[in-house]
Image (cartoon, rainbow, N blue to C red; front, side, top):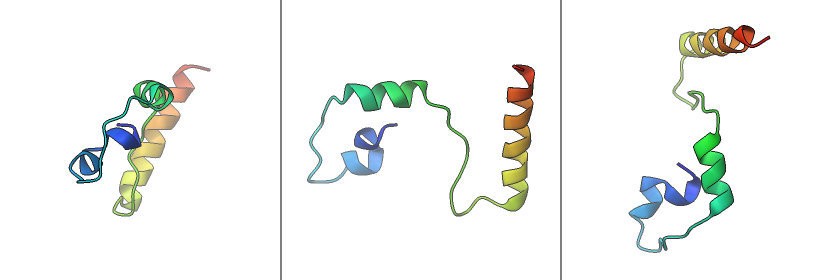
Length: 59
């Protein structure tokens, strides 16, 4: 989701629905990988291996 479509924001009393074409296009075509403060080293390594494998396929 682009930031303006995040469920947490949609529930806020101050939220106003908007159409932001560029943000929506980037979110639709974006490349997303797991991240965050809670991701373990083992999970980071698993993600890195998967990304490496993916991009090695397209050399």
